[in-house]
Length: 330
Image (cartoon, rainbow, N blue to C red; front, side):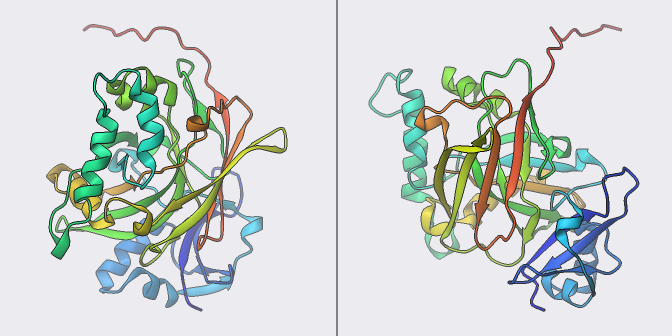
């Protein structure tokens, strides 16, 4: 069996259900990885053994797993959510500036918005020659492990949110090893869910707009990301597809190399704390918001792309209004 991806799962829905890890081959067949209850621990064991994650998992295969009978989880997590950081970069894909440029054009005093300037910096310098350091991308923080929603579960946008919109993306998954070196475990497709109306109101509200949940598809794709990755993003309402569009990723369709984006994230020492997990979204050029589409509660977002064999699917709901947050003084 050639292992191409890993999934985390539970044998049932109960809180005390037994967790496991399964390896998937190119046909979509899955086998349990014996002795593994999390991809993080499996990765730590692979590092300790001096093996790659795919080869290490392939040496521990057990019985077949019917993925339709188990509860699929996010492909990575941490028992202490504070030690999993979710962040991302924007304006990294060819065509990604168009929607953002439209969004911020009205507030710009010159011919080029800051979004377009940032995009052009990437086009001109995001793929440096000879493994050099390229242009610095836009960067944003989303949250810690608490904000990751398992595949199949609903996004909950805050009561104060202006919008709840999808962003179909690829994310890199990383573990910081004992000597502080970032180790890429693989890639996942995901939905970097955001509030685009808030962002449109003022570009300096981008940071606020990103403090929302996110979801990863159940698969951790091992090895390199395809140079030309093609997928589909759609929104389903009352059982019918009401918006759908292809999305592209992979370096062929990007203005930055993956290595350049990784450098500009992990160059900060605070992001190289041993044992921590990082989920880093690489951006998108496809948004329903850019097409003037308005999402609503009850909608279901679906993101799929080959070579991933499983999609990520999440519904949308709104949290109850908690009113003004008050701070107590001691």
